[in-house]
Length: 235
Image 1 (tube, rainbow, N blue to C red):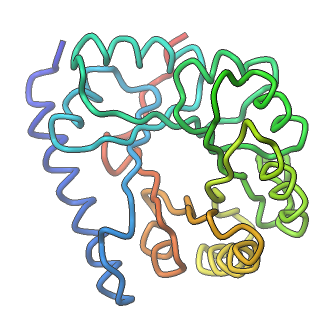
Image 2: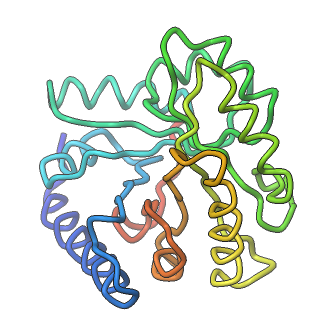
């Protein structure tokens, strides 16, 4: 059930986020249609996704398989036939590959050859994926080391069940967002020499989306600025 006043709250937040994206694009001479807005709806109810869908959003992200599979089904009941694409943006265990492919239209956190192989084995149809990059090499926080990006990208591209669509990263705490996103853009520029279809750069969140857009991001992942402070995750 939709909470009282929630539609107005989300409409205002969405307008503010869209204006931030537009300003950031204008500042560097880009068109705002070059940057997709991915709503990170983890921990928020399907009713919020339904409202955002009514407001024109079509791309949504989740990070927990169990929560996501339930939410995707609930959303389909709330808005039958509504356009929606779902992204997996959380750390993914190999044994969850088949389950995640039951709801995710794209997996944005492929960070190893073993995970790529698990997804390929579980796939019943071609799967769009992004390679998650670790800018500072701290793989404990998720991501494949940026210096080894070509090897993983080549492996994904040669796997017939997977389509390499681009890369994703989270700016590390050890450097400024500007440094991190500049390093990512440089790596992606080199990557596209061999993989010209890897056009997606998923970088930038509520706190640093302007810096990401200034360094070539084509997709910003926004949760807090859109939906508010994170709720406790459902069990």
